[in-house]
Length: 214
Image (cartoon, rainbow, N blue to C red):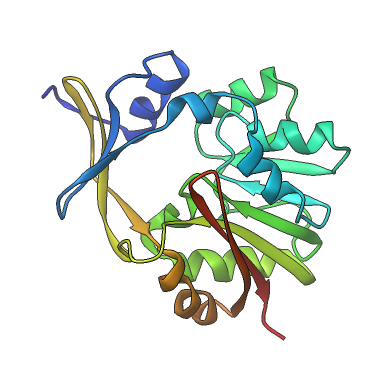
């Protein structure tokens, strides 16, 4: 493979239309193909089942090119996306989404006032520490706020690991990531001061609602 690239450079391959063979590889073995078609497309029925459960206003963490943000706008739901990728932010804004470039661990507008936060498309893995991520997101919510999380199917791995993005002859540097299965979410939520209150499956994908603990 070619010289190591910044993960965000690899991330931009999806936006450039290089859909085939874009994968995440895990240091401990195995990997998954990134569903870039879904990432770049409009919100689907499984996404809609998530958005039906939001409380406004909504913060979409790791929003990518903004399909959930755009769908919220179409529903008349106040929403802001946040993503570290310049290319993803520009694409989301091109689609009419209001998106902030930056990390959820940095400054976020209106802390303590968000009704819902979205951690979809595997974004529970951001930073490699799901409990810390849930604690941070929970701190941004109002008292009755909720996080809507996409997780792995029951029985799949829950673990912190290193990952990299690969495409044909190129690969990114390793970066911290995490995978969380539905049956592994509860302890992580409690460690972050949250409670899992509901879960469901839609379109072969698994989701959970996590509320701030009383």
